[in-house]
Length: 231
Image 1 (cartoon, rainbow, N blue to C red):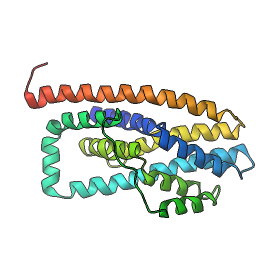
Image 2 (image 1 turned 60 degrees about the vertical axis):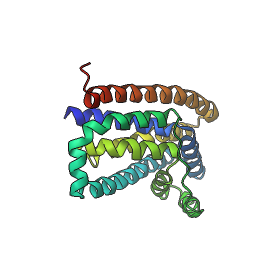
Image 3 (image 1 turned 45 degrees about the vertical axis):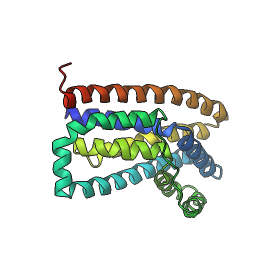
């Protein structure tokens, strides 16, 4: 239970970190602004934001279930992960920390324009299309969200044995800033630019501290579980 609790907290924080990174944050604000511009009541704007966030949760859970189930369905891979996860966790955390710090970069996924067309069509659906738009934006995978999802969340799901709870909390973390911005739009708050700049500054320090913690924990695991030092 303690391992699942720690994995759940980590997944939720990584989701928030992914959401306030510049690429996902900008797309989320644009999506909510576009959805909310044709909705007359603040309650409907908030509801559309909640549906958008739930769409992101559903997409991440679906992908995680498919990937984790596929990995664990291969006996040799499942046996290796169950027996060797403690030994590979340290190097994995170091790699993830380096990615979060920006030392390792991933290319942006290119869907050949098809993904953008689907997103525009879903956005025109207004309230009804908010959930679908959330799913499409989640599956577009900016480099930061892709690295955190496949590099961190999937190993967390495998090691904790959770195919739904951990991915769902990651999705909730990515959706939390979206709901906050939907509330602001519903209340008529116009200083979104200032909030965006503030979140950008927060994201930098959150990313640096998270990356440093991941590397330190990874080094500790390497020293104790691979090298065999008694620290």
